[in-house]
Amino acid sequence: MKLEFWRGKKVFLTGHTGFKGSWLSLWLARLGAQVHGYALPPPTQPSLFSLTAADRQMRSTIGDIRQPDQLASELIAFQPDIVLHLAAQSLVLQSYEDPLATYASNVMGTANLLNAVRQLTGRCAVVNVTTDKVYANRGWVWGYRETDRLGGRDPYSNSKACAELVASAFYESFFADAKSRIGVANARAGNVIGGGDWTPRQLIPEAIASFTQGRPVALRHPDAVRPWQHVLDCLSGYLTLAEALYADPERFSEGWNFGPAEADALSVARIVDLLARHWSLQRAWVSDPVKHAHEEPQLRLDSQKAARELNWMGRLKIETALEWTATWFLRYASGASARVLCEEQIDRYMQSQQIAG
Image (cartoon, rainbow, N blue to C red):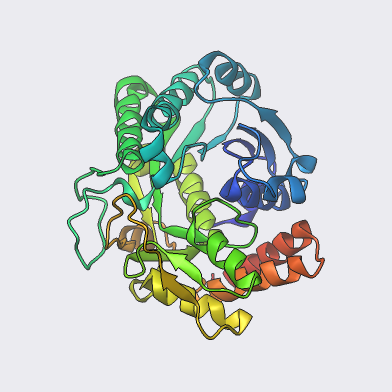
């Protein structure tokens, strides 16, 4: 990732009001990018986007990617260099409750965005953010590679696999004569953690809410294994891919995994045990006796392609990622500014990149 690349770049960011979108908005502002965010209102209360006043250094439009006319109007008027597409219905359990809305947002929303990209006149790199769950899950104990078959059993996972097919089809069908000008790539990351996440029915927010009250968290699937990573590691993958895609659209218009090291794929119970140490709890979790919808028991990502071809790798080991997350929430609870906490960790992360790079 080249920090100087972003200075002055025009970035159209969908989903900027969400958890990852808020962190990315702040990071892009620190890099000197011109950011135009497009998303629904903040999805949680409290909201990291509101607490950090993330719209202070960007243009923020509240809009719905399922409504193509406004989306196209905003995108075309802005004429971005980079499009980072994060807007989505991103919850597995919610996708069971409202599958049609999930497909409408994740599939048609992506199609609406890419159809608008067809009308851009300049060079543009589009990073379509999906998920580690796009693969047809075989229950393997090794990481999925970009060449493995897409699938997805639940509506969320399946809708994001469909969104990848939409992105690939748009690239091959409509940008064939502009391969040196417009690139479209799919980015798959792991289970993202970090400060300021209040997403309902997600592990870290639920765990921290329980710990704050001095009680163990109820876990739906304590033995489920996931590839855990800090939000800044995830976002650095998106930014690294965007840089490469902008420079060489034809070469990098593919699918890319941005997951943690194999050793950081841990069970839900293990993650909670490690996190609970920061609250000095003796008993971190209990099993939830309620029967819940199916969730895959094993999921890992193989990110060797990104390491080899993009020189990307996650910088934060899982213990460090959990420490940064716990520190963020503990300091915020003590009265620290959410924006200052985010900016401090962004600066610390960039310094570690410069040292390593």
